[in-house]
Image 1 (cartoon, rainbow, N blue to C red):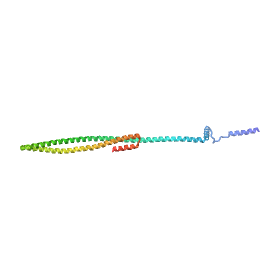
Image 2: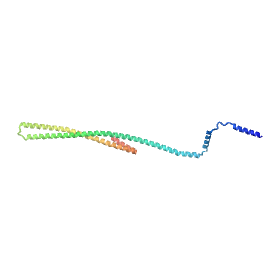
Image 3: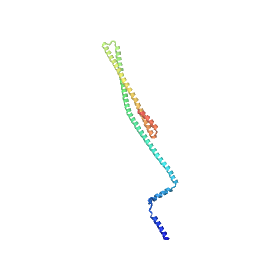
Image 4: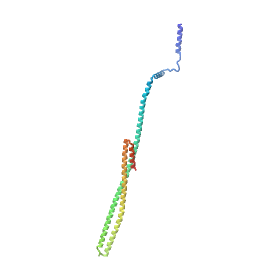
Length: 241
């Protein structure tokens, strides 16, 4: 009886030990690690997972806020760079216009000085002709007086008196004609001077407007006020025109 029971138990043990492992069952250390992680994940409470999600929410919002701030800063810097570039270009154009105005104004001033000098010379010449005319008039009148006060003068002397009187009368007419021509030239020089003076005033006003525009461009670069840029552009355009 004991021998039969021992044989039966031996067969059970041998059958269990000789049975092959299932091909689907995981084996090895990696499989054990996966089973351990799966067990840990399955045993993690739902409250912990929800708390992790809630903790990740503020961090995500903070990260997105930092990104938005950086993007805004980049846009502001780009806008400032564009504004500074536009201001620099406008300042360069205004300075170029001022330089050209200064050159043109210098030429106008030289022309004014020349016209003024010509006018002064013309009026001086006019006065010289007037002086000669007065001398001719005085000489003619003196000879006429001498002729009239010498009724008993010989005919030859009276002929000489009449000849000299005619010469001085001709000189009077000549000087009068020359005086009129010189007067017209002097008045022309004066008109030229007045016209050039008007252009000189315009160039001076343009220089003042461009200087004011450049100053406003500088203030715009510091304050970032676009309405100041518009005002400066108005002054610059008026100065350029």
